[in-house]
Image (cartoon, rainbow, N blue to C red):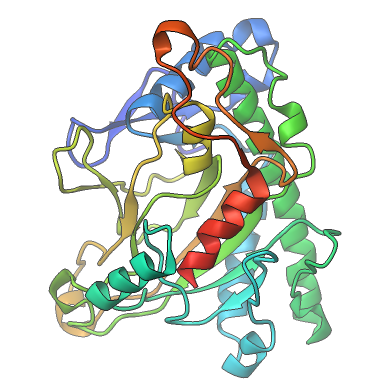
Length: 349
């Protein structure tokens, strides 16, 4: 690993007021008696900035596998447009397949009208993506390119392996959150057993000089994620920002750190925790300018996001210990995990 961080270390995003801690996954893989300090640090981070840099995860996701995933992703997006369109995303319920430039507008809106307003103000997002879900879900087949050529078959094998490894990381992190909340390490196990998650490959194409229109255009608009946790693997280009905490307004950079996964809490986990955990707005904008990029344009950016959710048949309501007595009651109505995610996704396309 490039970094060997402890649970108590932290790295500033761009200002000291937003500490995003570097938390090692390794203690969470050992005996539970040794995991409490890390579990407490994990919960504290999700209660404040909503983000962490996760280190020491290579026992589950080896560097060679991650390198191959990025290589396969780049080769997929370099395919002819007609091949990608043949694998197109179809419905929010399935949430699988290719989404071309301009089709999706990432937004914090929860209705089509709210998202349309954001699209009119800032234009479409400058990105294309490919979604992969759990294999074997009835009526929701993945749109694999294995029928196109041998490279497509290799792509399928690689992504299925990576999907499973990310699912393992999700389960370990949820055990850490359960410990931090005093629920017992296995509390969430039955909620994440099937792995109703989404692996999303993202390509932000090169942008010519002036293509960001002075900051009006962005690669991904301001939004919070919909599920429980997101694992983000990014290249070194940068451009990810999070909203400044405490209602102060403005944005702070989340700089890429070699050997880390950026992990953030999502809206459904915030609801589940009765607001104890924070789902933070974030976006992807014009990256920091290097060399002659102001005159020559910005190179492409690649990232891989793994969106983690409670299994889609689970009922999500305020967790024990978050609402009783003087805590003021339940802030949110209970909701089915799958229905909630379909509702949110439907508004963005």
